[in-house]
Amino acid sequence: MNKNVLAVFAHPDDAEILCTGTLSLLQKAGWGIHICTLAPGDKGTAEYDRAEISRIRKSEAANSAKIMGAVYHCLDFEDLYILYERDSIRKVSSLVRKIKPMVVFTSSPSDYMIDHEMTSLIVQTACFSAGIKNLEIEEAPYEPVPYLYYCDPLEGKDKFGISIKPSIYVNISNEIELKKEMLACHKSQRNWLREHHKMDEYIDSMVRFAKQRGKEANTAYAEGFRQHLGHGFPQDNILQEEIVDYIIFKE
Image (tube, rainbow, N blue to C red; front, side, top):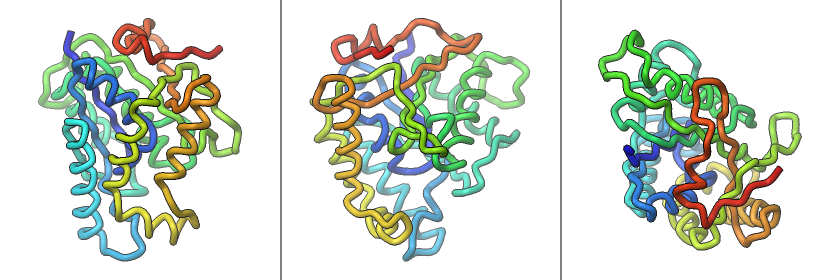
């Protein structure tokens, strides 16, 4: 079994907010961890031009990934223009085939931002097409289709404000300090979030949500996921095998 995990998100800091506790547990269980952002976060600033904030945010993301021994990748798409189209699907499919992950994490199919939703769709197709010979990319196809898990949307709700409940909770109580340390690497985002989102202390916000999910799962801190169970995808839950002591199921 190829024990690689690939977490694919739209922007730097998405993974830290949503799934690095679980990634850390998998890393401790012997898995290789890769974190990819489709865009460098080139519009997530009220201070810098696109080139400078891209450089800053990619450096922050790489430094964060190093904390858990993960490899960081950026495909250099453009914020707000992540589209479900040929070039995007090819680039993400190429990355999937290079890494050959057994497990993939990505954004919720329904979220507050279109970039996140498009990322979710692109990743779904890249996983499904991992073994399709006639996809026009250089990297060779491989089997099987990876296990695909959707993370929580931000604040656990869709664009209509309706709560989205996970079917799988992962107890990350022992990993919350690592999540905080990794998210703290994204220093450029504090001023941006204060200016654009009218919120401060983004680390505290992450911790509060992890505590909310933990309360739902009867533990201190948790991350929530839903598994993609459509035709052609694995139907068992590999997380239950690899980090069984930390998995909590909810109906």
